[in-house]
Image 1 (cartoon, rainbow, N blue to C red):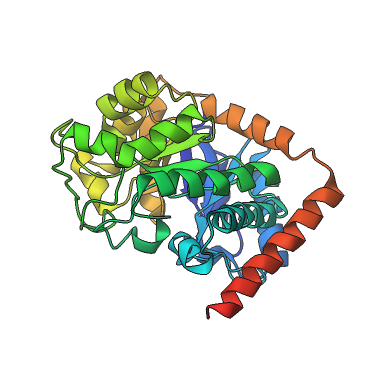
Image 2 (image 1 turned 180 degrees about the vertical axis):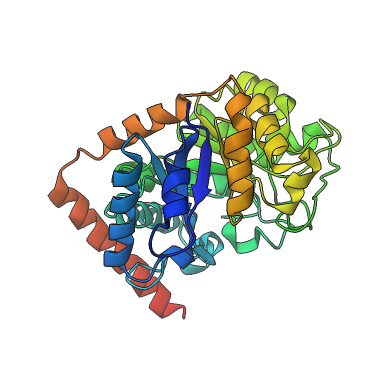
Length: 340
């Protein structure tokens, strides 16, 4: 029945947060920098969350690398994706670095019992400053190769991937956190460029979850992709054959406000095809969503399969995993120092 991912305010759970996390519709939590002081504290917070909910529960974070890495002290500093081509010149070395980055990022989070990082960014590096260096490249073919290697690293560590922001956020100048981006390109242009990345990686069975963009593509639909049955059901599910989990982007972002109140946003996202919705940085809005969605009858359990598959992938030889982590972190640290 769970459909909502919430956040918590600080290093420890408050009594109000415990009650909200225990709500039947709450299926996960997303962590931020404000939740991290040091590893032992974060580990205790996660254990407390697990004890509080006592059910299958998704603990997540945005920990892509570069400027979007929530935990820093005590963690390997994952370079921005755009730096892969700067750090390594040969194609084989770029792929090896991308895989090492994906493995290292996932391994460090899994050691703390964090299930997923919402990564990687599959957008093209175009005019969008909010994407920018978070993207692997401006070339779709290069993004396919490098992000595929990054995902291979995540999978090797035992973490599932989340490709974002479908069908592509790189060609709009507006930041969806504070404005409503509109991409006026034709569907054919989007399909041949941005969407080709998602299409190829879905075909290769590398993408386990997708996060649609809070962007309107008026040549296709007048709703943002995250609230659009056309984008999620007809294009992502039917045309591309995607069978994995669909997460909404944060419903408290400004670009989501076109869908109405926060409860209406959650309802529309779920009805459009999202399996889980995120409500961040606003406890009052999160409470409204939990109360309002109680009347909604359709809930996806697809996200639970992601948890089960995720746990199965962790059953690999520990010595081999530790050796891979050591070599990956050493490579990343060396390159960070070399180019600092």
